[in-house]
Image (cartoon, rainbow, N blue to C red; front, side):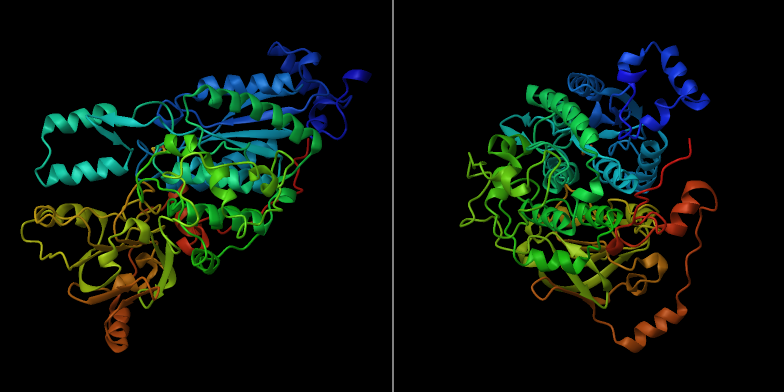
Length: 574
Ligand code: FES
């Protein structure tokens, strides 16, 4: 077997190279699948973790892309193996894909560890698939690169350009206000999702794809290439080739990703005015790599970083425009003074080298540093007696007039309560009210769903009002907008102060001073706290039981407490 014996350096050699009964079994079963020694012996085995599913609308092109990745692996002399893992399709999975992010992360980690895989290509895109796959691969510490699904093409309706999510919320408000007929609403339904790919606004999927690029775990510009253009196919082939290189170099992710890599990711999320969900995911991903990121890190950087990408929901344009304008590299090139340029990337360059030749092609989409969309603090962290462990607000997507606001609370005890009462003609609501939703956090909901952009009551919409202050322990979709205070921690289910708010209590939001306070005296709050009863947890078995016992709070990344960190050197017995 001399010239076919795999290098002892390859991890897969433990499965295939020995002259013993176990290796005989592994080799003979591959032969049973039609592979010869020439297919795999001595070659890096590249695991392609594929999150394709018929129920994941954003990954419908992955059946083609996986073949293209395999082509790249074969070109570079590797042996490609496709490994299907759980698919988290944002649109059809209920109550929320966030309930399953950690489950996919566990599956990815264990799938990588238990198989003869030397390096991996992670195929994800729809929101939670990105952090989940990266979290798992970091904990397994197997060389990998990430392959993003890419955004959908821009949608058109009449003379308007439509962006997924964002324009659905916008036109639904008009429909509720009686300004859009059924036929027009149907026309929008028919055209708003134009192609395969992820939401083409700067929602969570686009934010996380760009964050992966800024972390250095994708090929350059991978974060914005539209899903259905030929460059996306070429990206797939090139990703396959690079994975073989990573296997040969044994470039492990824990060598690659430093705390500075994650600080670059924070800067990226801020300058894109990306999804608030990404804050939770970045804390969780950093935790898997052994780095501590906090909301204070985020807020400190928020005070220095301008919003330069004019993308919906905060701005005007869509991902296809961003790609044509130069993509992430062109954007980051303008922020060299705040970035950590020495951070390494999978292609062997530093981040600074990777972006140095990038130029902005369209300054309307990627603004010049002298003409930012928002000077600093496009998203920021608030604290106060209503959120002792912090909460977040995307100021750039909120009505400036509401960013300093005091109003009476109107409390919904649960999502169901909100749905049943929000459009009641008797609802005691005015445009000054502060809508409060509780039992919507990581444990209370469960799963930390995207309920934080509470719908405005019909009677408010009919007054022509389109924004109100809303506060919850939920998240909101990255495509959402409005004066929504999110991720209030600790959540109400475990006795966070949100649990103590009563209708009519005054709540003071002051973004400039980074504060959120319930204007109720401490004695009254203490009295309410003593009377508060911890809600009964309804799920007593299975995954939901494990989830509710081990999920951490929003400010801690919502990872399971037992998954934090990694098992960098743990290898299975063979
Ligand atoms: Fe998949 Fe938006 S629904 S990215």
